[in-house]
Length: 244
Image (cartoon, rainbow, N blue to C red; front, top):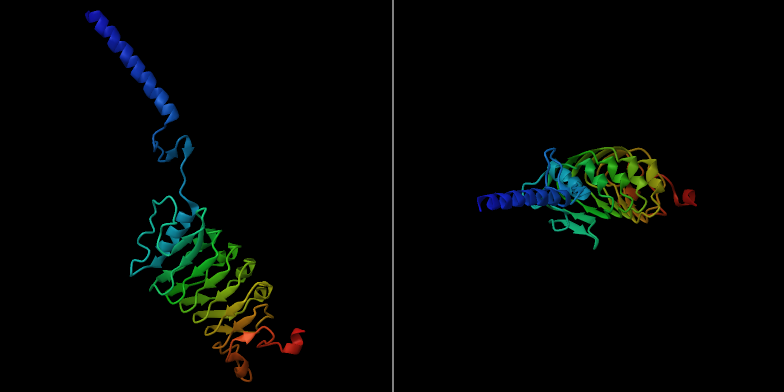
């Protein structure tokens, strides 16, 4: 009887060990010793849009806590405040106007490749406008007005061929208006007013544009043309006849 019990125990131990090995083969642990997480047999990677938005959050100062539910551990960002996603789960819009945000705008915004709308107006964001925004081929609306952005307008913005509304007014931007802006054929509105821009304004495709409040552009003799939003048949530098 004792021997019989020992044989049963050995058989059970062998069965348990074999079963455990087979279980590990098909269902590996969630995290191995190298720190890599797995789903089934495939290494798990964070959503690239989560990574980009968390970097944006980290570069901003958020005194009102409007970004508090932007969670680094999230599977996707579609349930986050101020974010709108497409039906298939890609970020289409960041709508964070009038939120008392300060700090800087991270270059990772250029990784949100499905982005169509960015509304960050009426905050206190400073620093340069990230040139990486030019990667966003689907971007139609960018409103960074009424902030504290400095530096030059990135020429790379013209790479985004879908732009319809571009508002950079009421910042502290310097330098000339990039000649590449003339290539933005889909522009409906371009507002560059109340900055510190200088030099000539290139010929623009925008249906309406505004450059008033830039003293080195709106120099003596040009005030009348600077005091309104212009139709594209007018230009601060070129007359209607020059454009024909």
